[in-house]
Length: 504
Image (cartoon, rainbow, N blue to C red; front, side, top):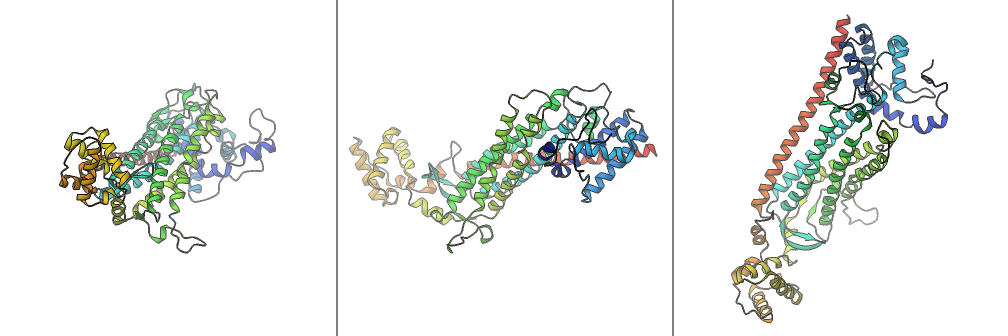
């Protein structure tokens, strides 16, 4: 019987089903799914031969076709060109074996397995590669951000709240804060590889098998940490993909906030940062323009996982807890594009952080005119004269209301104005001019912010040292995962050769 009408079906798929369901994703499956299917097939056949569930001679013939297809795909050959009508990649793939080896040999590999556990395993293998690639790119970005922060722990700049100048800070303190949030998302993303690393093979359609398969052996050959303990969980669950998207969404949102700040600070009104000409654009009509447009690309691409996460959660909601096209495929359709989009945003952010031109003189000039030291003046009234903070806050607020340039007044004039306001509040005090002058100095304000995780250089350097330690641990873990997957590939190749050698 033709592979187009398998089992009890007497007709090929309806042309509308073919047009809307089977054909659109087929070209992508041949590129992105077939390589994993080939590895899964090889591992399963090796296990069947080792467990004597399949004759070694039969297994060897199957593995010969498998290796031939893998080599041809690696060489760039366009395999499994579809006939006018088909029901998807797997049946065409299996039919290749049947046509080349005959049904009694070509159809034997499907013993003790189902498309359900195969598809779930493909999904996990493909996802772990995508996560590893994304996390590695994000770790490189974090390294560039960490290095930039370390170089600028003493580069003064105004901090902002509600887009208004707030208090003196440093660029290093800002970058350390953003990196702290990024690292939490990145660690969660990398940690998802532990959950992904449970092999579904052997679960079959979700109800296990009566054949004494060695699930642990297949898991080992495919680079998994262990097996999925419950057969239904193995094929029905996609929560691991939701976890990946949640971490990716968190990382992407953080990137959008960083990108917005950098674009704001790079505009002409601030001029705190800039980039070389090869990383900006100009206007088609306004010749003076230098647009840091890449930051807009970053913001647009970084949020793709947010939409994919929403679709995943809504798509799985109220689906039966079993293998389901709705939960397993449709709900996660945007996953791959979303992760690729975030990876692009991560790499672009890395590029801009690696080439940013910091302008400390513009940051200092902004600080000098923004009255950001007024909180330090209020703190001085509290610490030096025992005034209640709210009273000190009100007095300094009235000072700024009357003298918009309060921070720029000569020290003697400022001292006089402040003492007069204190007098109006019923507080007759003589202020220490030297201490007042120091409180008005942005550098002194920053150096004094030693507590609460503030921008004093020493605590910031300590923060960055801890972040560097965490990044080192994470990078080592990602490297170990890469070695684990490559080692499994090599072990599978050796196992295939062993089966074929035994047959010879």
